[in-house]
Image 1 (cartoon, rainbow, N blue to C red):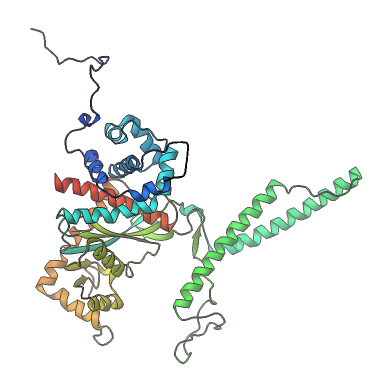
Image 2: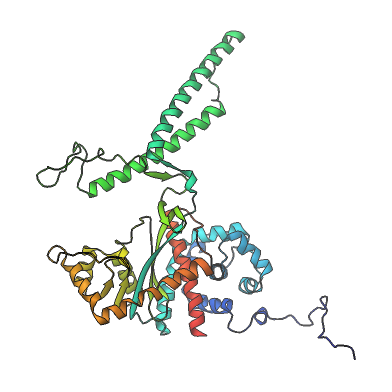
Length: 442
């Protein structure tokens, strides 16, 4: 008896038009994101288009937000790839509802609405609290280095900048002399008056390169002046300490002069060289505060300082503002230790457990008179309750970074500049949070 197969006819047309919602199984992530976005306040997105009398109809901001959030939640960050998915992927087509914006439209929408997209993060945090998902018992704070949209090979050290400036100025001088001689010879040959001609392309290229290097050197020197001023130095201090009686060894460099190895990047000047698992890279330092029970991100931060110890207080304050209540206990690793931070947390009445050294390393020797807040922190960590609570730190924020970097494969920013990269980090964390909420509410 021959085998009977289910009907298969690729050319069969539908007798009645199907509903796009039937193309996805019930409870699909795309449907969940669509429902959440429908409940958010998107007036900020629509405000840009109100009453401007444009003739070309823009795409619906609601649709664009849904597509962008689902793209980031499914690991599709490129505007070109999102535009392609709108044609090829069923979930994207359901959210697009027959709209196929070009990649340039998607890119422009993301750039124009960075602040509004970042503002959705707080709305979703408060929605999660209303659903009972965020209780803010334990709050884990941690940071991770994310590569900037910049090549480390497009950077130059301060010492190299000075050498390149001298070399380019010499070459420009030689080229100007050659051009002047050629003009004089041409005028004598033709018997005509000297005319001002366009500079050769070779000369223009060197002048443009010189301007870029001079601007980069100025940025380095401005940052060094800020750092020196924060240390109590001032212009004209003759490299002598200005605090106390002025005694002590002289500073190695003049006020506002960077170290020879200090670097500046030409593609994203606001990014910095940071140490990562894969060596030194152009990066930003991304922060996340994570609710201990639900593992939902409740606050974010981004800086171009590789050190974490100035980030704990802002993250705790942001989490408290976003959720509307203070955490019961804050957990953070040794990268956040600081006597000033510990004192500020105690003054605010925040119960925190912050390691004072790396695991497996010898404990720091503390002078209770010079570092009283650190000494009290050490005592809390030695108690049975403190040890039990601190052991939870690793399983709160670290898995979240694993989802971002290894599941979604977000390990590099698409946008350049600290402000834009910070908004994109909010967008990534919002997408991960929606993905986690989808699992928790299933």
